[in-house]
Image 1 (cartoon, rainbow, N blue to C red):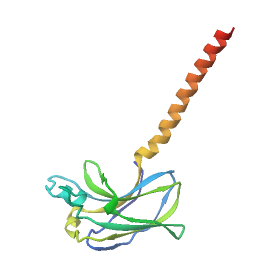
Image 2 (tube, rainbow, N blue to C red):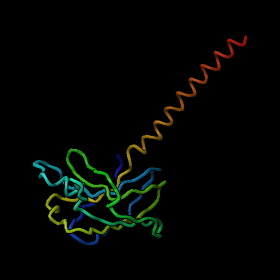
Image 3 (cartoon, rainbow, N blue to C red):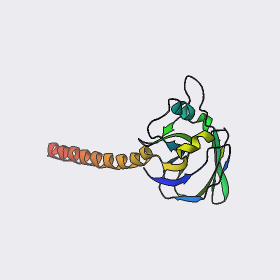
Length: 162
């Protein structure tokens, strides 16, 4: 997956300053807050990041995205349902946006007092949706198969018509 912004941050309540970042791929993008998921993983860490037992995540954030100097999108993590990370990280998707490319500025406000997560080296990431990127590739691969099938059908109809 393509990561366009990867910056260490503090998850204490407050505003996170971010630099401008560029995207060049026509895709959907996830705005993620991630922490080291190294062992041992505390039992409550997944509940803090994702929520559990019907309770929302403790980690709450709002964000706004500017493109070419103009405010474009904003949102909060409460309506976004999704974990992020890999074997070495645990995280939470706090927002999503679609772009065909350009220069962006992302501003994030941590609304909850989750500074206790700072010991796990939190990061703010903007990452291309790998499935979205792969869907185009799958479509192009499927089109060549359809073209091949149509050629076989055409040849069969040609032979039958003789």
